[in-house]
Length: 90
Image 1 (cartoon, rainbow, N blue to C red):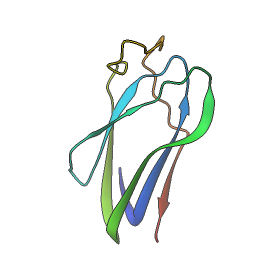
Image 2 (image 1 turned 60 degrees about the vertical axis):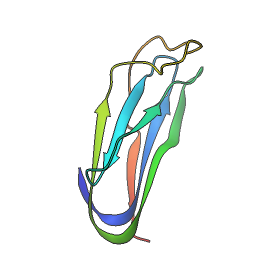
Image 3 (image 1 turned 90 degrees about the vertical axis):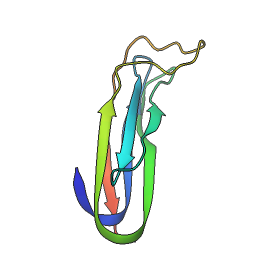
Image 4 (image 1 turned 90 degrees about the horizontal axis):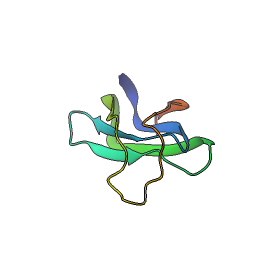
């Protein structure tokens, strides 16, 4: 997605059947976000990116279809939910 702003936040539902997603902005390297939690929790800011200036930026989200590479991960699925995306100007 493309947007005009200085900051972007992605809010998601964490849960027992959730997995990982890769986030990149403005063509930069990806950051892996794990959305697993033992219980369902809505409205959690799982990704935040601040830019040096207000301007046109891009955000790419890729659902990886996998769990965190952790032997203690109890996730029963690979879902990634979008609860909301907020763009801020300052």
